[in-house]
Length: 153
Length: 78
Image 1 (cartoon, rainbow over the protein chains, first blue to last red):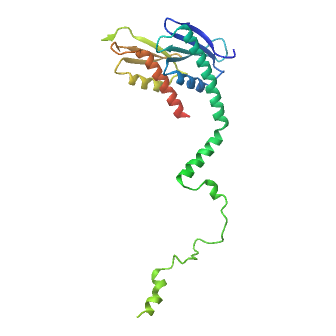
Image 2 (image 1 turned 30 degrees about the vertical axis):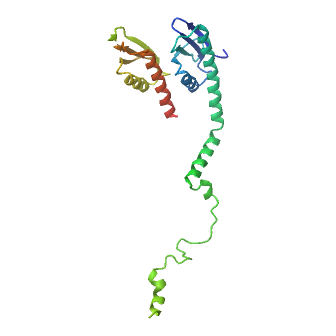
Image 3 (image 1 turned 120 degrees about the vertical axis):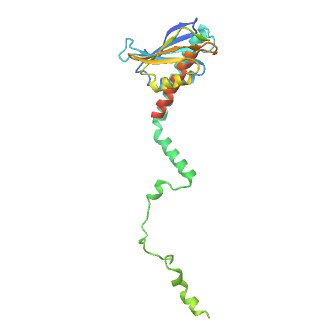
């Protein structure tokens, strides 16, 4: 089986049931496709053993309004397309996961005005100790101005 | 006014999370009574005392909510 199959069409109940092998798509893909249809249909997911090794997913779609047989079949086709779309989206996200994370990290760091982790990689040693005070910041005020004030009358 | 006949929905345990089903049952608690029990590979949800004045299909809407809640919870896990 290369794709999903229409298991049954019940025009009286405005319901179509699709079946697809468990190994064909990850369950996240099925959820993703179901999510797209949840505003138009009542979606019920089920699973049965079927004839294949891992069993089958069953997708029951029932229209929220009255659907004709043609509309139900169209709906099942749309669901199949959505499965493919979700599978491709998932593949692309997986392939580009690192790039997405890198760009997001840089964007957040840039927006925050902070330093990037890469800024710390090239830390050139200037040979100074933390006790060195070339600008005389640590010299007390009294020591700095004692002479001047003593010279003045 | 309520519908006499209770409806039983079977939700597969591999597809629906129990907490998600409970959350959906809480959402619809004003419109029907829900009893959730494990039944083999499924959760059997008995929906009774359905408010007859409610427009729409309470049971089907409940199933949609249970599915949506499951998706949300699985998303959080990822």
